[in-house]
Length: 501
Image (tube, rainbow, N blue to C red; front, side, top):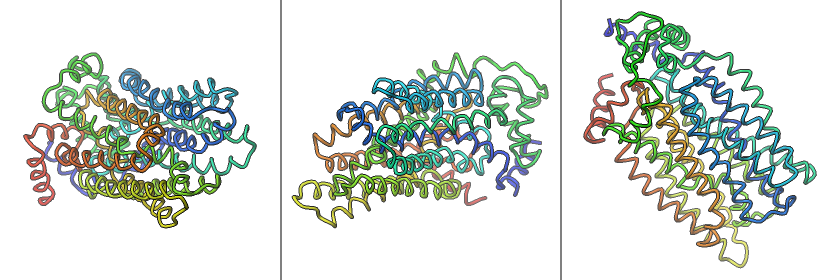
């Protein structure tokens, strides 16, 4: 019977996008727009906050980076919370946290209250970065999982772009009102998301982990194209949860060792060889996403362009909008390529392009910084290299980080394992955003990007040797990829499967 269902899964229906699953992923990914907006809007708002509140560069760095330190705390809380109350209600909690943070930042009469609002929003960021990709992964079919799981990263980029546009338009208001409007309007989508998310179904995989198999089956019928596909996916999830495949009960008792919760951290801290490899891949990809310098470009692009020779505030903000447009456009392209080209190929191409772009940016900024007069070609090369770096990042490393780290963990470890990756991601992000100005003062801004280029070379080697292809695999089958002796074995197996299909 399972063979028959597997054949049905491999038919034409498997490759059709389920509209209901797509709609659920889009609504869940709206939380990422709020996070992206909070990140993007701060790059321009800092110019006006510094002038209005009379703060120094160190306080600017702390204001920029504190979001990610608090997101580190939020990500660790989010994994356990989502295993406890479910993915859907945890998104509601995150939306409320964002709302409180936005209200405080929009009001902020002093630096202390602004920091408080930024910290609260940071906790919401930690929740958002975990929940949107995990939820999207758990409702998706293998044939279009990459597309739906890349929606959160696309929404982050869209949010960053909206933040840049908000900077430009609100910058025409008075100094005291402009930056507060930039930060405060983030509360509006939080209210919309809280209303929308309650109409969505819970993750079928979370429901099975609670023993609520009957409810999970109803959800799978909604997010699958055929009854046979839903049944096949349910059997896979039941097997992963330790439930007998022949069991037809709507409510069952889950074995303690298969539940996400108490035993999870023990298994993560004392992992088996496959889980150790998975943890290494997850932590590595999250670390290198930000250690290669994307936050420096997104958050401090006005300063980079100013160093290159653009001095007018409004022109600086317009040039920054170009960064947001490039990022959003390229991630949109990557969204449709992930399930065709595969994760690994896009990842290696992306990082290869980033290495060249970062080295070029380092060279052009060094020339511009040490020249006594403006050099037009160095200015143009700096802008082109910045856009090229953002483009290569956005077509691979950006979206794949979240897709890959959310799909490689076994079901019992997924929420809390992925939360560990998000925690590393936020710590690295905080480290870059809180140290970039000091780093560029110490080794020059051009030297900073030469350093990022060197880190990108290490990242390419890491991905080449330690990140196998997951394209087309069900979430329950991916763990097997990490039990092989080498990525070469995996590569040969994947090629053989692709040529036979």
